[in-house]
Amino acid sequence: MRPLVWVMKRKRISRQQTGLSILILILLLGWGINYLFFLQADCGFIGRGNDIFILVTGEVRNPGVYGFNREPSLRELISSAGGLKAKLLDSEGDRYPHLARGVRVQISAEKGYMEVLTGSMPATYKVTLKIPISINTASQEELDAIPDIGPCLAEEIIHYRSLYGPFKTAEGIRDVPGIGELRYLKIRPYIGT
Image (cartoon, rainbow, N blue to C red):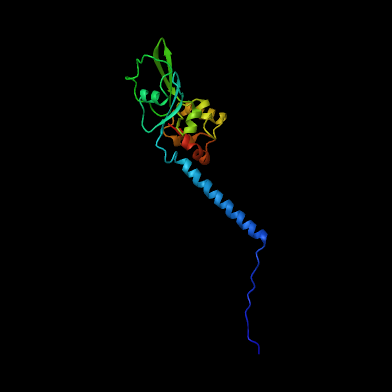
C-alpha cells in the first residue's frame, strides 16, 4: 500500500490582483492622510505662535499683514511694518489702545500729523488666516467669502438673522435653511458670533 501524502497547492496571485491590492492600499493611505489634514485644519494653526494678525496699510514702509503672539501696540505694529514713510508727528501713538486680532489699520498723513483709522480686516484675509467672521454683523459679501457659502446662502443667513435676531452661538447657524450638519462642519472654523 502507498502512503497517503497530502499536497497543498498554492493559489497563484495574478499580477492584476497584486496591482489592484497595491492600488487599494495606496488609496486607503491617501484617504487616511487627507483625514488627518482635515482634523488638523479644524483645530486651526498648529505650532504657530502668531495668532494675532493685523493688516496695516497707508503711510508705512511695508504695508501688509503682520502676526503677533499678543495684542500689539500701534508703535509695535508700525515698527514691524518698517516704520513710517515720512516723518510725521504722532498725536495718537501713546494713547492708542492695543490692537485686536482681525483689525485693519490705515495710517495716513494729514498736514504733517499721523492719522490712524481702524476697521475690520477684509473677509478674504480673515478666511485665509482663519480669523472667525461674525455671523451676526457680517455683510453678504463677507459671508460669501466663507468657503461653502455662496451669495444665495449668504442672503439666506442675513434674512434669517433679520427675522429671528442675532445668533446666540455659532452653532445657531444650523437653523438656517440650507445649512446641514456637513456644511456646518465645513464652515465652523471660519465663523463666530
